Image (tube, rainbow, N blue to C red; front, side, top):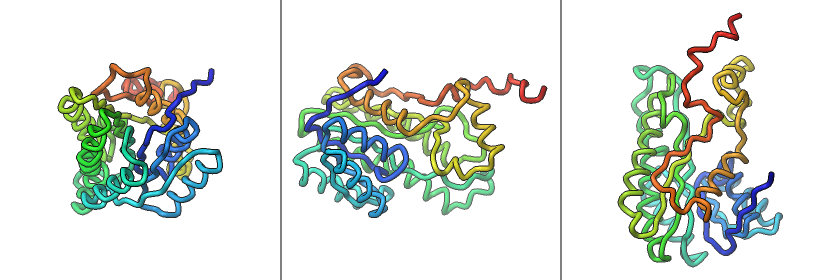
Length: 262
């Protein structure tokens, strides 16, 4: 079954829109008629995404941003509003993973960088986006958290802390601005088939699949569809929710499975 959405003339901002989940979300909104602001620190990735959307008949522009810098985020949102005339939807998606080591081995500078890019960035984006949406009479925001924002991530202390923070920040912001017609939700992806996972050893990939009840990795296109739903007329009574799109990863039952040992 194919699900279609109509976001004609809606102004949609996507951070980290030049690759991965952000890229697929940007493409999906472009095909659905939105005017897409692709925000990314990489001009090459951002401009390629814009060219892709335009080639498919959509409307898009690239805006450079370092989401870990408050002033950069503010300038980017101001530029989007100036170019497109307002802001209706935002997908705060940019992020990094950080060092995959036990907590005591995480360098303090890496901790600060992960918190800046994965958590503080969402705070900066919300601060800049919400007033622009209030000026339009309302809007919708989706913050990318993670399955690691709902459960503990092994050897991912900084990332896990940041993504738990994104979930909490989403709930707090939804409480603050629901009365002004701003809906804010969090997307919590599980293991997604991306270039990062492609680079993992085969036994690592097999373990990720084994730990997923649906028995496969997710795709960026599936995550984009979840974002589209959260921003659509089909979810107008949903706010402050952390939506796990994870193949069942957070169900937590893999410790009771022994069939790989038999």
